[in-house]
Length: 431
Image (tube, rainbow, N blue to C red; front, side, top):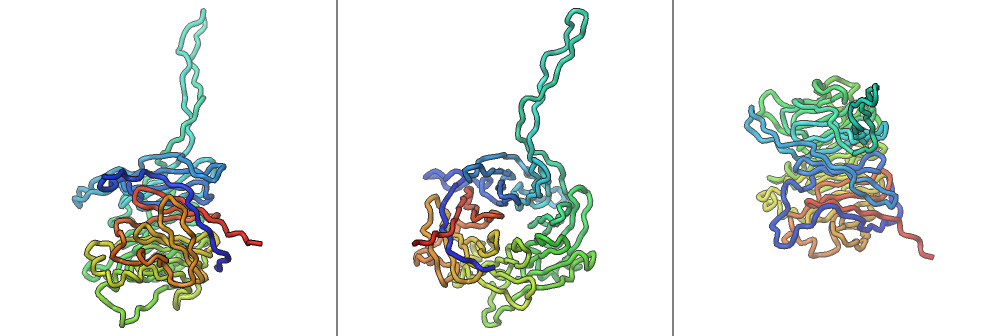
């Protein structure tokens, strides 16, 4: 998990319109809420708060181009609870391709859908029935053209009483898990009306509730293992072979807080917003409000690396609580080889760290290529003192969603209604 040379990151592409001057703000439905590369890295999907999914395909020039767009979810209303269900796409996950079609799972708060994006032949009728002499000429149906279309193959509904925060496909390609605040369900992709509850932390009396599930993910290789995180800062590794209900986890990764540092905000800032496995399944990446931690799956005692993202915001926690920013859910990502990790921050900044702890790079999501800054300390901080001043940060500009290409040094980050693509190459040794 060691990194070698510094990477020189360069701006490559941006998708999404820049708000015109004088325009108060971006339409809420246009804000990107999910980003996901497929397993080959040839496709990337972006979902927004309006329930739409846009797919881009990598061309021969290593540039992404528009491939398909479809409306995945529509606004709904829960009449039993008198609540409106937003169409917002919470997560997107790709199924490994078995043919020329692309399959992907999408979910909003309540409903999960399996979509098939494929080429459909357009059938046309040539001439009608007519008599030619004493013979009847029948119409002919031909297929000359194809059109790219998205079809919902399966719809998985009524599986969750609370809002879905995670979906993750198993390495077996046939099952997946979905998680809400209280439960994790195991589904078969071919069965829509039945799922198995594998984790249930809901107490008999809701007044006794002390934590909720915040994220869940399958192991990339072992189809029986998965992890889930909690609002108390714990990451739990569960094994489907051990019991039908995996409430008792086989391993718990949790770092005890120094009692001297405890405050009113301690539990809020320790809540894990995202967890990821490295591609080889050896390491776990976890993001809470202040830090990004790397855990070795074989070592529960302490994380092998801790990157301090928001240390400069500690004295602003009261203000961040009042404006709800303290509840922002930042995602994280591993590089393809596990030597680097990435997460976002405010002011449209995101940071990339060497997992050996020897350096980091902070980049602002703009159309200009960043001046690559390699640092030996001060993780998560920009070299510019003005950027570090919490009173001068724009908390409405934030990088929450991101993805790292499964094979190359190519990353995608979402900033409001725009998706930025960056690429990197190892610097050439000067002679």
